[in-house]
Image 1: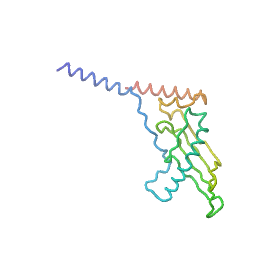
Image 2: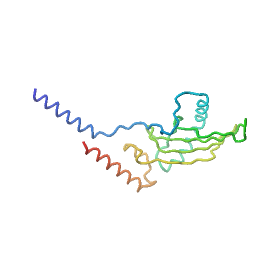
Image 3: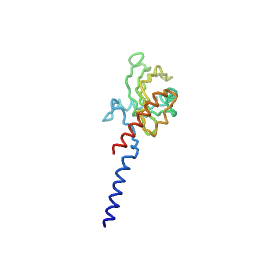
Image 4: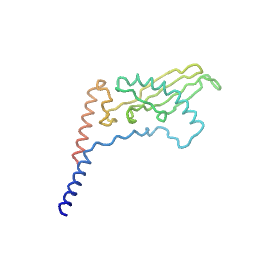
Length: 179
């Protein structure tokens, strides 16, 4: 009986110690908090979503070139991570030329946020033209889980990359020794 109790106690101690050494689970990124999160459907929201769906291929193409020097893989853009900032008619009431500004939050892997971008398109019955593209921020090393750091290109800013990587490892080691 005492032997069984000792074995169970030892197994519990081992389980508690090794649980703290296990890597943190990687979870999908939540949409940025300032992204509008509507609670009910509306006609306006449906039309905006249809417009975003039609512009998504154009946006993804631009993101491939914009993030080529930053990531080893192309980021993906999901419709629920695109916010319509502004829409205007170019030539006044009932004209069919529009200028639309979209704020996008591209991701890689399991929805790891890699930045924020602003797109401005001119849309008419015959064409979709990218008027302006602005890369606002990202990707940042501290925003990546350790097992996805290989998605970042190391040659973009090696000093900052390795400094952030060493800091991440130091924090991880510190957290493991606190047990």
